[in-house]
Amino acid sequence: MESAMTRLQPVRRWLRRAFTLVELLVVIAIIVILMALLLPAIQKVREAANRMRCGNNLKQLALACHNYHNDYGKLPPGGQLYNAQFNNPADCHYNKGSWLLHILPYMEQDSIFSKIPDMNYFNVSNPADPRNNSIQAAVTLGVLPRNLPMYHCPSDDFQREYPPVSNYVGSLGPQCLANRCGNWATDSGPFGMYCDPSNNGLGNWGYGHSAILGSTHFKDRLRGCFSRMGAIVRLSDIIDGTSNTILIGETLAGQHDWIRYPQTGGAGWEAGWAHADGGNTHCSTIVPINWDTRREDGCADGGIHWYGNWAVSWGFKSRHNRGANFVFGDGSVHYLSEQIDMKTYQLLGCRHDQQGASIP
Image 1: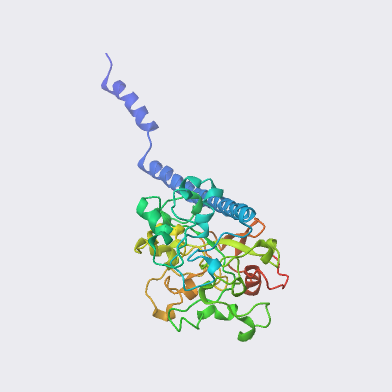
Image 2: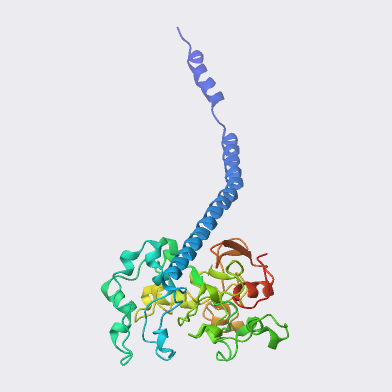
């Protein structure tokens, strides 16, 4: 007859094979350590992929600008606030969209562009004619706003909260800005010396003082390739060479008030990147790359990190590591370090300094 001891032996053998609590904790600890070791590598790979996708987006934008130039003999208007042929900067009622809108047919988005009404309509005798504001009309019709993934850097999550924004900005070059925590009409803020180097003791860098905020339709008052008021710039105007001149760069939508403004704005502002004055021609190289403007406390501490201070927030920046992507006039994409020499950065931003700067 089988004894009780005999019946218990398999149970004892099973108990000897089971994990103890200590062994289980050791296994869990090993798994946690492995995950901790692998996570940075996974994040690094993901960011490398995002940075490449961002660069590809910029490449496509530059190609679209070139194709637009082939058809019209000029780069797309940075922001068409009026009909530039009348040479009247006071006529800012003609909202015909930003450069990001004008290149839609070259980004396989003609289905959107073709639905925007009255793009060639300009009532000069009555600037208040509502047909002059094609962007507002497109919003009313439901054509805009639109969320276009190719207009977003995948590393920036701001567009998840408000999709109709873009990370990509046409370059003003070393354009003077406006300090909202000072005399905005004359003070370009803490980096103002870079928009007028010779008068600030930096020497001759091949350019001088320029129109505040790029508010000009005259190309000779514009240092870069795009103007927020539609100055006509041709590739032949890039005297320093297209391979040495920044065309478009990236910024962070949440740290730039004119890009995030459409969340609360009206009269077509909700169109986001499509609006003629919606922020996507609003970046100057005088602000160092990745200058932090996330603060929302106004002019505290001089407003040097306030997203609403144009003198500091209108700079190129990214979520990438210690730099940002740029595409140059020849369509080549380059990653510029946030540690770039500021003189070199300005010369790469200016299209006509004739100083012979090269990409570091």
